[in-house]
Amino acid sequence: MRKSPAAMVLPELSSASISILLASILLASILLSPILSPAEADNAPSKESWIEQMAAVLPGVVCAENQYFRKCFNLDRSGCDSEAQSAVKLCAAKYAPEMPAVLSPKDGEKWGSKISECVYHTFESNLQKAGKKIDSDECKDPTKWQ
Image: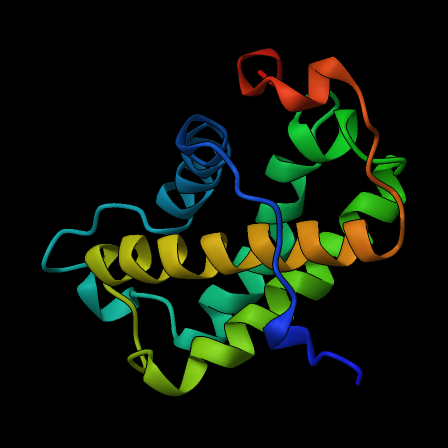
């Protein structure tokens, strides 16, 4: 019997490894959600615009040279960016129905965190299924990922 993707079990990641990656991703979501004055609130990004920005910015964060996905998977920058953009679009589509039409900075942090966590797990799962994981001591130690 073939297991559905939902039934597949990913290796448990340490809280430190998730924290390191999510800190980088949170930075991206904060950059996408500038603090707005009440007068600027009318210029808050639409959900669609915010998702486009996330798809443009997040790959640059997670695919930087010394980050986990570049160090621990056989993936060049172009391939990493492409895979990350696909994961962002997939995860954004998953959460888009729940998101408000216009995102405040607080909304940007909330949805940036949710989408970022989804991207991390989706991206890692897809790369592991493709056999791109590098089995090294460095990749097993999240303190060495930067």
